[in-house]
Image 1 (cartoon, rainbow, N blue to C red):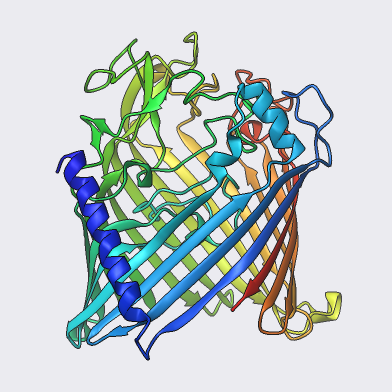
Image 2: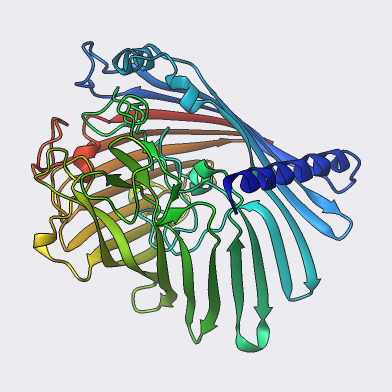
Length: 491
């Protein structure tokens, strides 16, 4: 399907949603819910790119309105999610705009959309068909995703720190069918994405326009407009018009819950395609562009309760064939020397355990402790391939990239006060994060979350954020420590 046809299909989908809204007004089954939310964040460090001291300056003042509509139109169920965001241009954002040479940074943050518009029918009691713009969350982890790759994410305004993945995930138009098979002890889920989405709905977004979550030292650097490195959604290896699809079998075998999955879709992270060493096609314009090549992934998840450890153990494995990476650590722009394909196995093992700490910290019920170990293994790794860990930085990728994380949830006052601690350490490259937070619930409507996002490194990354040869993940996040406050009124 060409772009014009895809745009037409998107318009038709929006029209169907509008018709649905008109009918919903008279539908007795209508349920409306949602929230009004205020995000505030403050820098806890100075940003070296600006000439002023940015420490303690407000980096985000974001207001969000979300409305959910649920109900039935005859035998058809519907679920529609709308969301609108508006930001105040803080003095800190104004300084970043000065560096960018523009005054439109908040335009990247302001948005309104129909996030989901799903219509559901049940041809039989064991078959459910959902058509429309929707989200599919696969896999066993909410942190560094393995199988949760059906969709990309929007990390441009809050990086990966937002606690609900569904708020960052980018929904897609698809037919999603679930067939329950009780006699076989499981269910088969099949989805087909016909390629009707807007181009921008594909892949994961980073702050490539130089906003508050741009990697060091690129705050105020606009790669998209300033350097002319655009997205090419029509590239031969990753045309967003292409049909993508997947299938997952979920079942129970003895004491184990398991799933088997296959999907073909777009690499969630963009890679750089350059004129210096073209990758499966010509450059659409300029000297470089960002593309999302198509890849195939097979996956397996397992979970079970262990009496010996009194804990729930989970595992996830995702094998991607011919996953693209950028190469050229010594190139004049690191990573711009070309693209290489490698077979990659991403794995995760997690232990979730209830621990009664009331005698030590006075909790009202047992705390939840979750420990996760992540690993990305380039199975056909060759040092001579000169793969960079992050395009634009000269640090080389290792055969194994391993991360350990800890999450601890505590409960007080009948769960109305919930302190949390999230932490992680990069076992391969060094560096990590600590995120202490506390959640307050006031009655049925008010929710408050306060957190500190602290990043650190141990010398294997670049503490100054100067784009050194050793800048890996947590060097990318250098100088990004934040205090974040989220106030929600839900209804």
